Image (cartoon, rainbow, N blue to C red):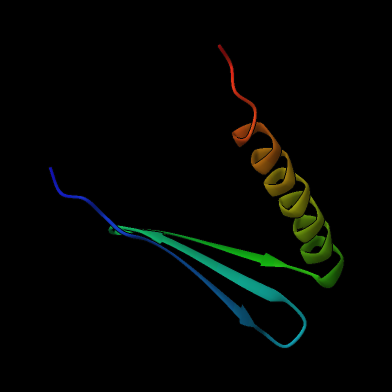
Length: 60
Protein backbone atom coordinates (compact mmCIF):
# COMPACT_ATOMS: atom_id res chain seq x y z
CA UNK A 1 0.00 0.00 0.00
CA UNK A 2 1.43 3.35 -1.03
CA UNK A 3 1.46 6.24 1.39
CA UNK A 4 0.49 9.56 -0.20
CA UNK A 5 1.53 12.92 1.06
CA UNK A 6 -1.21 15.48 1.51
CA UNK A 7 -0.48 18.98 0.20
CA UNK A 8 -2.44 22.16 0.73
CA UNK A 9 -1.63 25.18 -1.42
CA UNK A 10 -3.18 28.61 -0.95
CA UNK A 11 -3.04 31.12 -3.80
CA UNK A 12 -4.50 34.52 -4.46
CA UNK A 13 -6.58 35.02 -7.56
CA UNK A 14 -7.98 38.32 -8.71
CA UNK A 15 -10.99 38.38 -6.35
CA UNK A 16 -10.72 35.05 -4.55
CA UNK A 17 -8.57 32.85 -2.37
CA UNK A 18 -7.86 29.52 -4.07
CA UNK A 19 -7.22 26.42 -1.96
CA UNK A 20 -5.82 23.36 -3.70
CA UNK A 21 -5.83 20.20 -1.60
CA UNK A 22 -3.90 17.30 -3.16
CA UNK A 23 -3.72 13.75 -1.88
CA UNK A 24 -2.01 11.28 -4.17
CA UNK A 25 -3.64 11.62 -7.55
CA UNK A 26 -6.77 13.30 -6.16
CA UNK A 27 -7.10 17.07 -6.12
CA UNK A 28 -9.81 19.35 -4.77
CA UNK A 29 -9.95 23.03 -5.66
CA UNK A 30 -11.94 25.41 -3.48
CA UNK A 31 -12.37 29.10 -4.30
CA UNK A 32 -13.44 31.41 -1.49
CA UNK A 33 -14.31 35.08 -1.40
CA UNK A 34 -12.78 37.24 1.34
CA UNK A 35 -15.72 36.78 3.72
CA UNK A 36 -15.70 32.98 3.31
CA UNK A 37 -11.92 32.85 3.80
CA UNK A 38 -12.12 34.85 7.04
CA UNK A 39 -14.96 32.63 8.26
CA UNK A 40 -12.88 29.52 7.52
CA UNK A 41 -9.90 31.06 9.32
CA UNK A 42 -12.01 31.68 12.43
CA UNK A 43 -13.41 28.14 12.42
CA UNK A 44 -9.95 26.63 11.98
CA UNK A 45 -8.61 28.73 14.85
CA UNK A 46 -11.45 27.63 17.16
CA UNK A 47 -11.00 23.98 16.20
CA UNK A 48 -7.24 24.10 16.77
CA UNK A 49 -7.72 25.70 20.20
CA UNK A 50 -10.27 23.00 21.11
CA UNK A 51 -7.88 20.30 19.90
CA UNK A 52 -5.02 21.69 22.02
CA UNK A 53 -7.26 21.78 25.12
CA UNK A 54 -8.53 18.22 24.59
CA UNK A 55 -5.00 16.94 23.97
CA UNK A 56 -4.02 18.08 27.47
CA UNK A 57 -6.97 16.37 29.18
CA UNK A 58 -6.06 12.99 30.62
CA UNK A 59 -8.78 10.38 30.80
CA UNK A 60 -8.23 7.59 33.32
